[in-house]
Image (cartoon, rainbow, N blue to C red; front, side):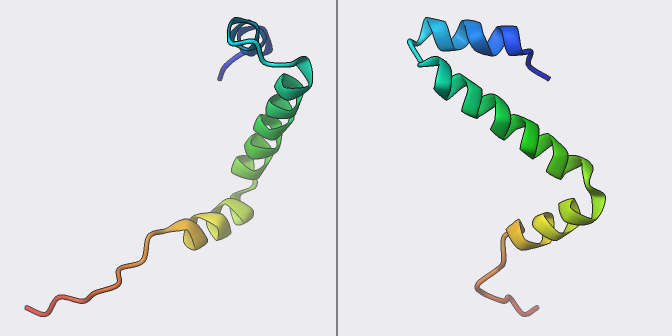
Length: 58
C-alpha cells in the first residue's frame, strides 16, 4: 500500500492542491474498507464482471 507521505510527495511534484490529496486519501480509505468487506466485495465483483454479449455454440 502506498503511504500518505508518498502521496503527498507525488501531489507536490505534480502541483495538486492539498484538498485534492485529502480527497484521494479518503477515497483510498473507503475503497480499502469496501475491499475488506467480503459480502460487499462479492456483490461489487459480481456487478462489475464483464458480461458476454454473444454466445458461441460448438
